[in-house]
Length: 80
Image 1 (tube, rainbow, N blue to C red):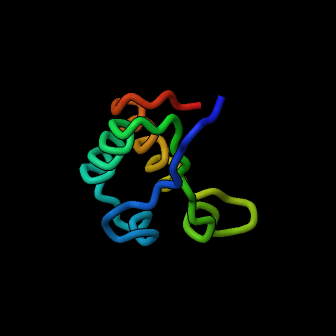
Image 2 (tube, one colour):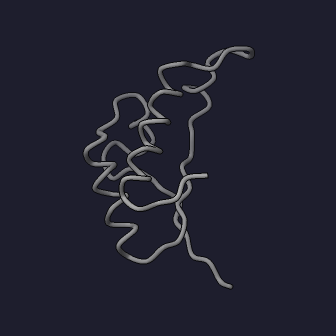
């Protein structure tokens, strides 16, 4: 089976969106991508934001990732 997916880059603020996310725009993006028939989506994290030190993950960023996964699921994606 051939699978087609996309690397998700937010349409607003690109990779800087991890600093100030527009979750409404992200939800709209996920819905549009799903409607186009893709079967998976890949989120690219910015490690300089998610892991600011060698031994500590940023809790706020992890919370944002959870929100994005919830939005993806709401748009019809099965999150694994």
